[in-house]
Length: 429
View (cartoon, rainbow, N blue to C red):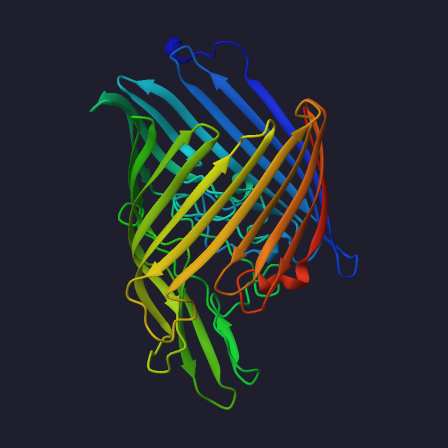
């Protein structure tokens, strides 16, 4: 090995063992049993570089949440988790090398890039796709799909502020991993999936994934800085929308059918974020403008029942920490379609709100929190109370509820039968 690339000491190794068990509230049956092992190894080199590798082995015993209950065609071959039988999967979560080089800091390899930081729902956190195995119930860090990425950052002082420029090139052509039609959290809302009468057979083809290594890459940049008390960012991303458009074709015959062809489309995303602390308060927000998003329509004049429109999404949040060990946050999300058409299965202006309260007790060893997500348009939502306790520095016990409500046609109400009680444990080695 070249002397400039020798390791300083031995590798640093951490491991986390986890167990999650969920039972349905309506009948007490087991909905989820998830055993996990997450090892992490870090090597430091004499040239200032560092190599990080993270694996995740998961064993999921219950039908509806097993590896086979997730569409795997949206993954690029080099990113797709490897199945072990029908109840376990092994995934290389991250593998990246990072080091300073002249005035730049480079991070190259499989990684997560987090732009947005809103609670519960996303606006700018779109660089990495997401696994929807458990809808949006899994922690974002675990549900995000890491991508093979070239990430370069440079810091400088200009115009009275400290700035960081980030450049991204993402040749990894992986997209949202969606549940299969018979999975526990399979989408059924008319906002997301085509609706048909029982007499019509729906056939879903494998997604048509972009396959050109260079031309179909994603690329982006982010300029972030701290100016006059404000944390600011300007973001741009040229990507394939991680959510496929479900183009449809009606096939007449003795048994009529609808062929659904998932297809990915390019979009430009321009946006930014802001935040500022004002005493016990923090005001913050994110905005993203998508030049091209596709939505379902029930307009009979539309042959493939899919139409596109630019979309403007934003979130405004207000946080308060005026009581010791207590944090309260409210957020307003809105999405507006500037080329809205009659027949779209979602509203022209879609509004949601969240409310989060968190309090710590006993020298930060006990935490009680509750997150409420509400869709204003559909009148449905999700309530997530949780209690966690650090028995030791490396041992955490927790319990919580996931409670859906509202109409079956809404994004949250479609899972009204999936209310569950969860308990879990995480142990660090």
